[in-house]
Length: 225
Image 1 (cartoon, rainbow, N blue to C red):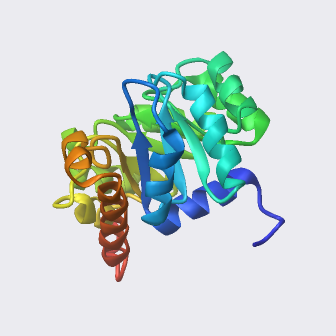
Image 2 (cartoon, rainbow, N blue to C red):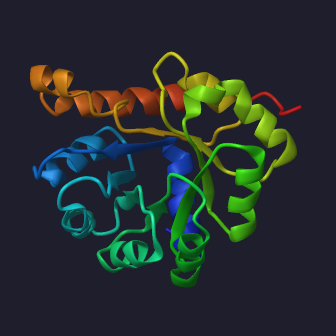
């Protein structure tokens, strides 16, 4: 591995390489590492833990320590700079916001960690980019649809777009072909009914399936108009 790249550059390279950012979103304290392991076995090299998960900071620290740099840990739904700093101190390498929060983006740049800023409109995307976000999380992705990625890339060709919300096996490839560099989601990778029926192996298969879909979609990508 190259040693002359920053943490932000390494995170972005790994997320683009796999094309997925699966999210662990639990309603009570559970074995976070087991969920992260299932995602890692499927090929994920970054995993998001939402701050609405009980014991989120503990989970971030546990997963980060367990994988020793082999898995980037993101914190989702970070709403303020104080929380972002705590995440970084607990081993988090990616801060994910649901919307543009300028002081959070500023703090991530100060600490040289990645920030995936939530946004939807062109104005919000521009604000996130101007503040220095590493990537822009388009949420809810399904609302604009796959072709909305193309519209954004036409005016912001250098932006890293990661749609989240409503990403499925049926539409993930189209999001990639239309300009997204990766896809994300919680329910996409955390269907509790399927997990109850099949165990955590279902998560591994789901992550692997989405990586396969994304990799196939990235072959001979069409030019953005």
